[in-house]
Length: 293
Length: 296
Image 1 (cartoon, rainbow over the protein chains, first blue to last red):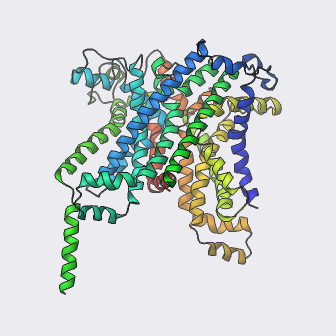
Image 2 (cartoon, each protein chain N blue to C red; image 1 turned 45 degrees about the vertical axis):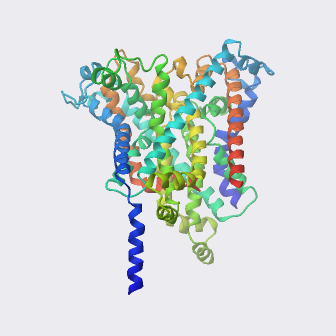
Image 3 (cartoon, one colour; image 1 turned 90 degrees about the vertical axis):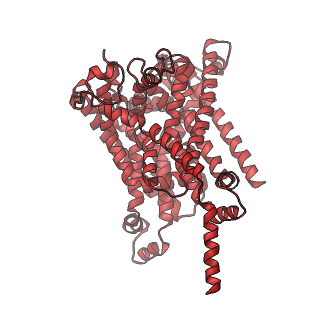
């Protein structure tokens, strides 16, 4: 009986997630180009050919992939760090009840509730060269920059991408840490207060250590979301992501659907899958060992 | 009497050092104030720019709209076939949400009420599918849909059905997980009473468990709808002109010779309303469900 109830859900998950993973590995060993798209099962065998091209960091394809990987790592590290920092700060400051706390929480959830593409397209508008808000504030109002800045081209596109990503993700960190704070026993704070600890010391000595298990999971989730994010860069930059912000999801997408070379695209995807498995597995191993100790 | 007074005095002494100092209150005001501005800035830009004429959004930015007009809200339907995209999105997302909730209800009931071989594996596999980027499934799924189309003549690529099937699996894992938790909180004695009354497992689920879990089921439905509503990657590859959804269609305003920023902003507002409304309605349940996974 339980299997019968699970079957429909399982079938769809198999069709959309597990079978494609197997097919992805299969096609990564095939010379699958546009010619064979309709009969992809009969695409010629390529052995490790695709992997050789993709992982040859002296060749053009491999070099571009390596560059994209480095960009993604840098982007993820900065964006996750900032999202966590903002979310954690806000949650700790809003821990004790004060007037307007409920309203504030609703406001902080806005970035999370809006459809991604609608908010990211608004950010794209705000980053426009001639008519955007960011240049208006920095150049016209504050006079920080001597001339308007191109935010969606060149090196600055990295900053733009990080900004939008942090804007989207910090509310989640805020929510999770808020929930985590509720499970810290009040007695701990009271005991610390009686021992003469001020509020800043209480945050450092009681709050932060208690949040550790929550943070461990939160950082992993943020890492996966940010590393895998496609929508933000795709909507922000359009089809051609600028080099300094060419993150891996968009890179594989472009490499596959602009050239229709699915063989190489699959090889890149498999490498990405392996990387994510190793990193997540290693992270879980380290954090759980530390928790046991 | 004396001892009671002593206790009261102790409690007061306890409370006093807990009161935050001024430095903390000012830090709180400033940091939360800045974050409020950061969070709401795009919403303000969206709203104010959607009320400006084209000439005002193509020239230097201004905080306050000087020539307020609602014409972007009218023109946006003509510049691109927005109404059609809207209909497509509503059909796809509603179908995906309904099917997802239905499947999740059955699966969650199994996970909650039965101890079976592979139960943990099932939960793990389902959750781990959330870890990997969509791009990983996109290429192979594209190929599989091509093959199914060739073999059966039923084109999934470019059809709404293909998109519905894809989307419903995105929300399924979380839905199952959340609903199983919800079902766990419903007393087993209710199940047993139904069984005694002659209901089969399916009857028990439909007549007892489901009616008692309406808030959880609605939450899951809202979540599934929101997930589908905001999806861009698969929509960009799997739809054609006639099945395009809002997620992709909104970009059409930028491919014209002019970029109609005021209409884009107006359209963004309109496409946000359904999900923001749903989110606000379900906020309490959704937030609990979303955060529980990380906290537990």
